[in-house]
Image (cartoon, rainbow, N blue to C red; front, side):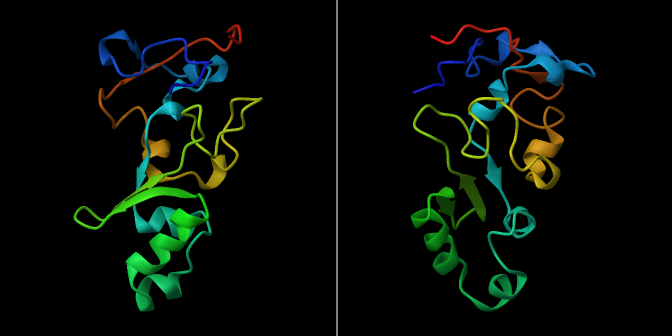
Length: 135
C-alpha cells in the first residue's frame, strides 16, 4: 500500500522529474516511500549496531534483533544488504508523517544521501509538491 500522500507514481520512473537544486524544499518526500537498502556502515551510523557487534557477533543474530524491533524489514545474506522498515502506509519508518521530513537527516543512510544521483533513474526523482491534499 502506498502512502496516501504520494502524488506521483514512484513505480513508474518515466513520471519522475529531472532533479535540480532546491527541489526537495517543497517536496512531499515521495522518495521516502521506496524501499531503502543499506549496508552495515549505515546501521552503525544510525546507532542501531555497535562496531564491536559487527566484528564479533554473527550478522544474522543482530540483524534478526533489528527485524524484531521493527527497524529492518529484512536482511539479505547473499547481498549483505538490509532493507529498512516501512510503516503500513509505505513510508519509511524514519520519515516524520506530519512534516514529511527525515527524522535522522544528519545521520541518514548512504542511499538517502546519494539520492537522486543513484537509484532506479539517476538524476531524476519522484518529486511531488508538498501542496498536497490528504486523501
